[in-house]
Image 1 (cartoon, rainbow, N blue to C red):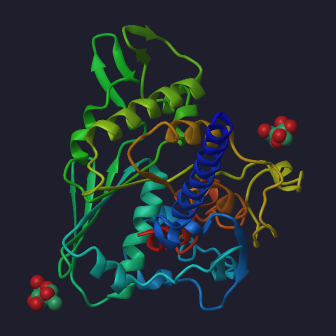
Image 2: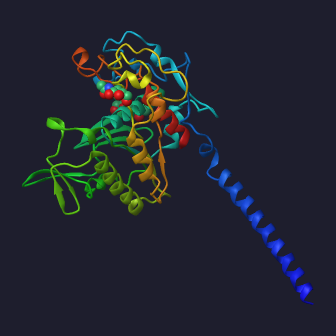
Length: 360
Ligand SMILES: *[C@@H]1O[C@H](CO)[C@@H](O)[C@H](O)[C@H]1NC(C)=O
Ligand SMILES: *[C@@H]1O[C@H](CO)[C@@H](O)[C@H](O)[C@H]1NC(C)=O
């Protein structure tokens, strides 16, 4: 009798282990198949390959490119940099189709929120869409810090909210205070169907181009603090805003990722280079010798704490490989400037938008 019980118990034990294993297999299979094909492919690991069918539009077909990004009309003589296509290692990207994008987004609004790198991507998207439907009417308007590009026929709004820190700067008696816990400007983001955030480049600013006098965390007001910690704190405030305000059934949220600069050739094995000038081709391969900027790690760690779905456009590495694609002396200030932070249009931000297109 007792033997029997033991055997019986052993049998149940085996059955439960078997059951457990089956459940595990089912759970794993679901984890892999869930989310559809877009999440199975890593669009962000790949190489740049020459493709004469690129760029996706000629600068001349986009009359509204701002001087800052308009490298070819500004006199840039070499054009090889415009003929590259991003090729992920493990899959192919669909070529950007502007009509299809507009049809998918009919009646909807898209808003980029961030600094001039957001403006760079916003301009790229409006150029990609306009060049696909050059005879379709559009309007451009600006209301305070928000630029609104409307494809009237499709009722699609592509907007830019210039907001370099995401958190607030408030004028007080002591001066301009950067408040790392305050995100009142988020009221502009309500009711938008797709939001693409970005902040980073302004966190290291000092001196006259720093647009604040004090920095505040909680009740503590300081003259300055560790900038990477400030960046992290602000992102955490933004993350809390996402978690308490975004309805994922209505709103799609992206983070643009850290767009890299090229002022130090040591990082791409060309120690004599002090900027991106005269760089004509991308780096070969899939990795950047100088590694990733530390801000990427901070951003990813904050994103990992958000409960609502936020998709990172993880464009840092693919952009790091493009030391050739900045305006250099063909940007806003011409030969008096050296811009190795923004990107020529057409150019790299078109690829960011091509990946965005593949994700939606
Ligand atoms: C575009 O705008 C013009 C001028 O406002 C108007 O006459 C024309 O009908 C519009 N075209 C379309 C396709 O809506
Ligand atoms: C360039 O990067 C190298 C390697 O990180 C570093 O040692 C060097 O100080 C940098 N040069 C400048 C001018 O920042």
